[in-house]
Amino acid sequence: FVASGKREPIDREALDTNAVSLVCPDGVVSMSLHVEDDGTMLAFVLIAVNTCFAGAFRRNEADVVEIARSMGATKLAFRSQRRGWIKLLGPEWTRSGNTFEREV
Image 1 (cartoon, one colour):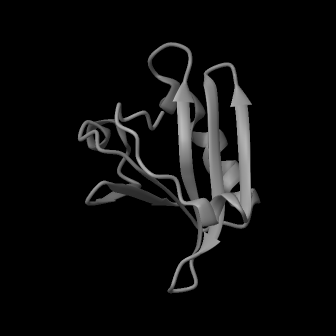
Image 2 (cartoon, rainbow, N blue to C red):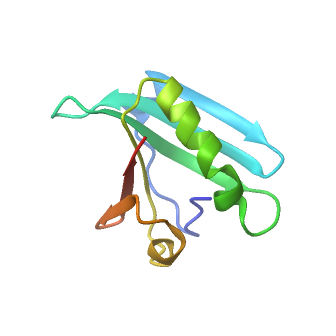
């Protein structure tokens, strides 16, 4: 659910640390867990691919949030060049540039 149509660089350091990939009927999502400079534990979506029908984000958001929480994260974030995400995301999400973030 983070497909932007453009390839964005993946943080190689994140891949070498705490990363998890999840597969469901809608597709796959990979997240890494790392500590921000301010000490916040952040679950960052590295890549997400929707292989099914529209609405994958809404159907799976609660599960992704719960998995991020179980990893010890206090925030969940992803980057996308698509501006339309702001219309799809609920009020718990904030946007800074092309980064979208929410508390878990």
